[in-house]
Each structure stands twice: as structure tokens, then as C-alpha cells.
Length: 412
Image (cartoon, rainbow, N blue to C red; front, side, top):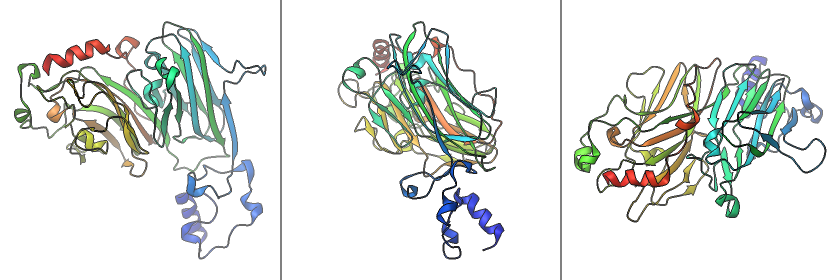
């Protein structure tokens, strides 16, 4: 095998050992070469199928452990304070983030903000309220799992709105990484516990993209001219035409080269169709590389999130899609209240070379004026386009449940 081809396969498969394309032509590397230690040139392959391969690099951790050796393994934050939970000054890749928080602050999961900066950048590549970043909106906790994100709670912690939160998205960096958590609440955080587990290397391959995550909210979404409070029925609504997606809810807009790897979408359903409680039917529309018409068009909200016929099962957890927070599906107010759904494109990332815009209708033809919020996740080259300014705390807080139900009944 030529040196050029071997170098190409090394870049393609992300490791310097035996590749699928070279199995017949190249001998197994000697054990001494496989145990190269901390001088690795880039990220290791991950996943169950690659656990038998010798790994290179050095495993490190930034955590809130008590430096005195006692048991107060936490950081406390006054209102307005920011904790730096990782500050790394070399090439590497974050492999896992774990976090849990204790505070008397209501809705603290929307008041506290997670940010990440790669390679000395001044504008964060990750900016999101903490709870939404880990996959659950509306400042709520729940017990759910997916491949890249999860929450763990139950019993008394759940009733106190506390949970362990985990992220397994790989986050590479060439010169350094800085992760922060800011308390934008009015109450002190009594305890912020965290782990940031990462690997370090001598460098990254040129094709390593940077991880990004962005929170957005539109409350309420801008509806079409149909006034649902006047009793527009489902048949009339089905005649609404939307081919350009101009009123769609925007999950993500990015410029550069990269790939979109999914989102979570939170909906508080406050504007249903008369006698039709379902908030879906809105199609996903994704515009790639400046296409004026959507490049990818879906068939309904539940379809994009890999379900069908509404969300008949309510809460469910699966590796790449699911419902992390569910309201009622039956009874007098079906599909009312607060929901969070997720779809992660782990096996089918959506590539773009210049730009991407990920949108979804809020109901067929954008007929609903609902509370929509989301976190979009993607990898791309730097520099990234400026994020929309994070709304102030009062614009991030969830609608009180009683007010949400009052608005639901107004049109239902």
C-alpha cells in the first residue's frame, strides 16, 4: 500500500492502526507501537465496537472535588457569579460532562447558563440554559436517556426538581477549551457538582470540526392569518399552503462547513385547534447551502421525531429519538401542557458546505401560536456565525401551568 493511501485511510478512520481498507495488505502493528501513550496525534475511535483497540492520549478530569479531601465536593455560586468548570490549555477532546445542582431558585434550569469556548474564541460555541442543553425544557427534570444525553432522577429528587445530567457528545479542540456555568438567578446555588472528562493529544487532524449548541425560543410563534379562537376547523386548516417556510420556527442557522446532529424541541401547547388537541402536523424543513426552497421536507412533527399518529405513548426514551417530557395524551385536555421531544442524527448527520437553516412548522401551515424553544446541536468549522443574543432571564422562564391550561381552553 502506498504511503499516500495509508495516510488517507488514517484520516478517514481516525486512528493510526489497522484500517478496514488495509487489512489484507498491511501487517498488524507491533504491541510497542500500539501503546504510544500520551503522544497521540488525535481523537481515538469510540463506541462498543472499538473497545478492543489500544487507545492513545491521556485521560484527565476537571471536577468539583474538595481540595481539602473532605466531602464538600461542590462549588457554590452567588447570584451573578460564573464558575469555570474546565480550563484546558492544549489539544484534546471532552468525552463526558456530568452535572447536578442544588438551589432553592425556582426555574433554575432556565436561569443557569452553560457556555463552552474552543481554542481561545471570545464568542461561545455552546450557549444554553442548563436544563435544555441536557435534553429537557421548561426548567423541568425527568428520568430519560438517549445516546448522547440523559437525565437521572426519581422520588424525592424529582419532586424537588433535581437531577443528574449527562452529555456524551465528543467536543474536540486544538489549543484549549473553557467551560463555564453562570448563575443568572436571584438565589445562591448551594451546590454545583460536576465532572468534565477529557482526553489530551499532541494535536488534532485538520478535518476535526468543533461542537456547537444553541438555545432559541419563540413565545408565541407567529401564526398564519387564521384565528383559532374563532373556531377554524381542522378541514379548513388542512387547506393552508406553506411552501417557503418563512413563518416556520427556526431551530438553527449556521454558516461554514459542517453537519447538523440533532435537536430537542420543547412546546407548551397554548393554542390548539377547536376540538383537536394535537399540536403537531408541522413539517420539518431544512435548507442547505442557500437553497431558497427547503432541501429536506418532512411530513409532520411526530414523524421528524421518529414517532407516528401523534405521540400516543407519551414519555419514551430511545437512543436517537424520544419524548423526554410529556403532557397528557388522553382526557379532557389531550396534548396540552409542556412537552420536550428529541431527535439526534447520530447515524444520519445532515451535511452542509456553506450554510444550514433547520426549521419546523408550528402546526400545519404554522397555524399555532405556541411557546416553542429548542437546542440545536451541530459540528462545524470555525469561526461560526454570531449566535442570536441569549434572551434575558424573564424571557426564558416557562409559562405557569395554570396560565398554560387557561390559554389552551380558550381555543379548544
